[in-house]
Image (cartoon, rainbow over all chains, first blue to last red; front, side, top):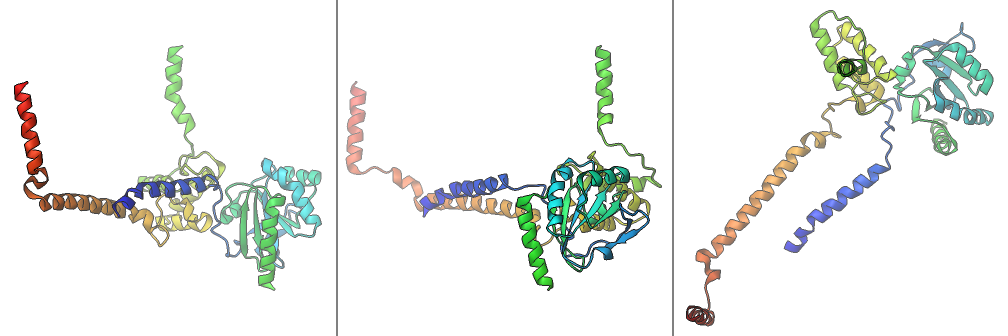
Length: 177
Length: 158
C-alpha cells in the first residue's frame, strides 16, 4: 500500500505530460463560434455587383450553402480563391461577404480571379462581420436552407478542410430533408 | 546623442499603446470603458485584452464598447453583446457555470487536499511515536549490551 503511494507523483507527472503533449497539437486560434445553431444575424447591405440592390438574411435562405468572409487585403483569401472557384463549378452555393474592403478593389479582384459567389454582400464597415463574430478573414460558415449557421471554419478552405465541410453540408442536408 | 536616446525612450511607450480619441460624458463612464476593455479579450491576438491590442478587430470592439457605454448601457449588456458574438472565450473573467466551476474553486479544493495530506502525515507520525513510548526501539538485548561493554572496555584500555 505504502509503496503504491510512492507512485502518485509519477502518475501525476504522466497525466500532466499527456495533457501538455495533447496541447501541442491544439490550435488556439480555433474558437468555437458562438453563433452555431443560431440564425444568420439580420442585416441589410448592398450587393457588391449591383450596389443599388439591398441584400438581407432572407436572400441566403433556400439551400445548404457556404458563406465565405473575404477581403482583398487578406492574403489567405487569395490562396483559397481558386479552390472556391472549383467548388462553385461543382455546383456548391457560396455566398460571399466582402469584409471591410473597398468596393472598387473587390470588383477588380472578382474580375481578375473570377467570381465563385452567388451573391456578394458588401460589408464595408464590418457591422455584419461584428455580428457574426468574425475576427479574421477568411472565415467560412455552413448555413442550412433556413439560414441557420451550422458550422464555422477559420482560415483558408483547401481540399482537406473541404472534406470536413462537405461532410457537414451533407449531414445538414440530410437533417433538413 | 544620449539625450536623443533618452527622449526616444520617453516617447516610445506612448507610440506603442493603442490610441483612440474618445470623449466621455463623465469620468465614471471613462472608468467603466477602461474596466470593460481591460476585461475583454481580443479574439485575434489572444493574449491581449482589447484595450491593449492594436489589431483592427480590437479597434472595432473598443468602438462598440464606447458606443454602448456612451449610450448608458449597463456592463452586463456590453458583456452579453460580446459573448453572443465571440462566446465565453472573450471574457478574461469567466462566468461561474458548470464548465468553469473547477477553474474558480479548483485551487481551494487543492489547498484543502494539501492541508488534509499534511494533517494525515503529522497525525501518523505522532501515532507512531506514541505506539513506541520511551524509545523502546533503542533498548538493547542482553547480547548487545555485553558486546557494547566489551567494546567500551577495549576503548578505555587503548
